Length: 142
Image (cartoon, rainbow, N blue to C red; front, side, top):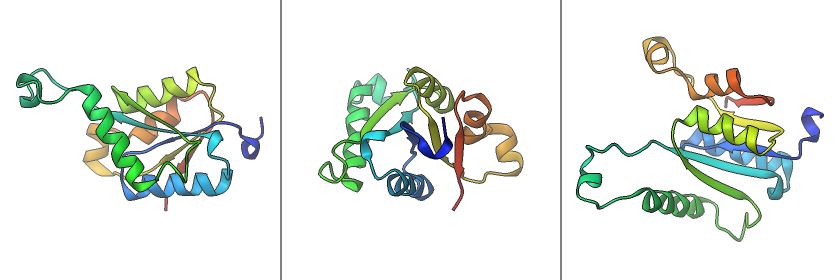
């Protein structure tokens, strides 16, 4: 596999400006939305959260809200062939697992440049994806 002859791209987004830039650049590079899968990973709902207790929010509603927000930025007519996935779980694990299960050739992930104690305590999703992915990972830094 050639790095620039990739057939399947995975672009994780978190709705930040940097992740949108990574997706825009991937779309410009590929010029074929059929080759791109966008993934967003939601944190699991905790049993003690008010929306769970009062049964006002569930995972399906959260997924629909994310899909609607994505399609506000990218109307379906512009990217009708782009695949969009919403998963629930640990972001880095879900990204790495999705890439492995779907034989992704290249992951394009945004870097947020966390540093210091914040990075030490929380780690970085991009860093863990780079460490554990079985395919090449391009870290987008604007």
